[in-house]
Image 1 (tube, rainbow, N blue to C red):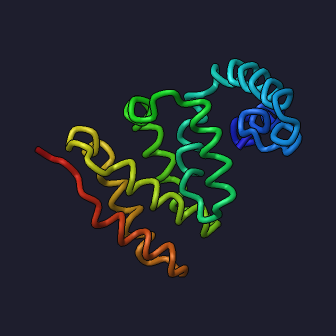
Image 2 (cartoon, one colour):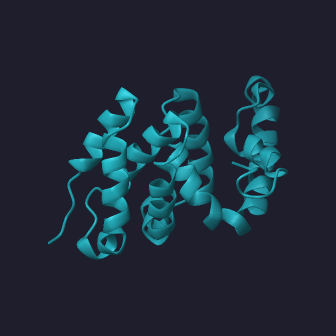
Length: 166
């Protein structure tokens, strides 16, 4: 994700934000203090590019790998204070990222995109969805015809997503 954002140095900030390093969790209070310090510093350094990261973070939250989901989930909860507001604010970018990713060569990315779209579209109004409807429809039809069973199943869930058009 750091490479996709065009800043490979972000990998260190992401590691600090995810709290993944075992030393931080095994040294008791000192480890907790270090983690908090690194998280606050890393968060402030990532905030300027957060709007570019949110669509990708959103997609990675639905990765088929539980380890990826958990790591990105920690990043998401650290970086995004109000998830519903962040998704609403960045919905266009999120939808564009997910629709684009359904055409990926990687089955994990295609599956994550379908599952992410399912969540992003649930309960949305017609006004939120209509500008993207053609791309969403094409992406969904593409995924329903996928070679991987789990991607097809995720696409069928996407096709059945409940939207609030009232």
